[in-house]
Length: 202
Image 1 (tube, rainbow, N blue to C red):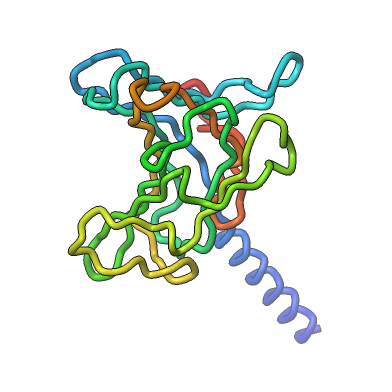
Image 2 (cartoon, rainbow, N blue to C red):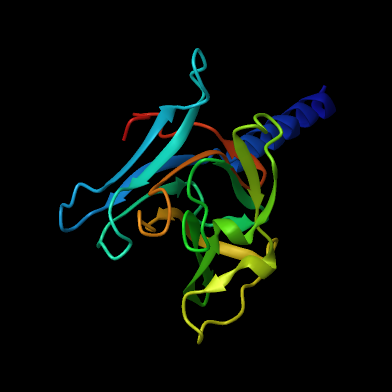
């Protein structure tokens, strides 16, 4: 009886630990528009086609790139993780440049350092779930671009401990369509296909 009780207790502790370690990421839309240009927007919206309410993250910058404004999103829950995988599905008719949409990944290694992962730099394959409309993008160590030349090298996937991850869309209509839609945003193999549980519109 004592052995059975001890075993049950150990199983409960293990289950509780596993639940605590499970991490559910959220992708929360954000705007940077200090001059109140109104040229940028960021929303989760139905995007897959008539009769399908599958949401995608829609980002717009309907102004020249030089405009001091950007659309984007924060990956809520990324702080403190070791990053092993990163990517998204990008709409074939939207903009996919070297600078936008991109992940801004801030690492923690004594000090914080910022690295960029631009859409066009990743590996591109058809999206498994919607190949006619979206391209799957996955990033590798060679795709990391440091913010400053004085940064130490990218630590590598599977080793980089993260302070924050954001998605930035700041290339405007002079460089492309000024629009992109992202879906199945991949952080450590967890695909996020909708936004902030509190309000998918913000």
